[in-house]
Length: 106
Image 1 (tube, rainbow, N blue to C red):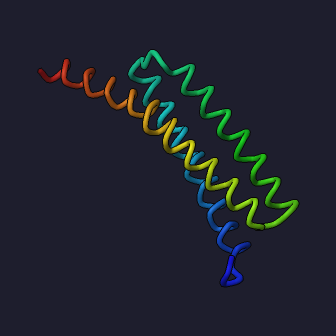
Image 2: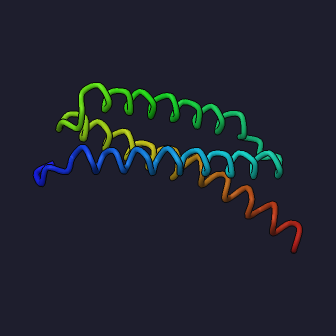
């Protein structure tokens, strides 16, 4: 923002995240379905909530631009997702798959 590239940087980040989230959630949900992950419904619910919140954040950016309040909000939103979802929920998928695959090959 200090360099005058706030809008461009946020736009690039939003475009990247939209593509990444769409592909990642699709791949992850397919993996959970194919391996009968018992937490699939909750994971899908969390993914859908992330998408809803992300679209709201994107709408705020489009309406108000890349001001400092928006940047802080975006950082908190993404940090929370990384800490709470990826570090907990996604880790549970990895542990489940690790056990499932070790049972097949062990």
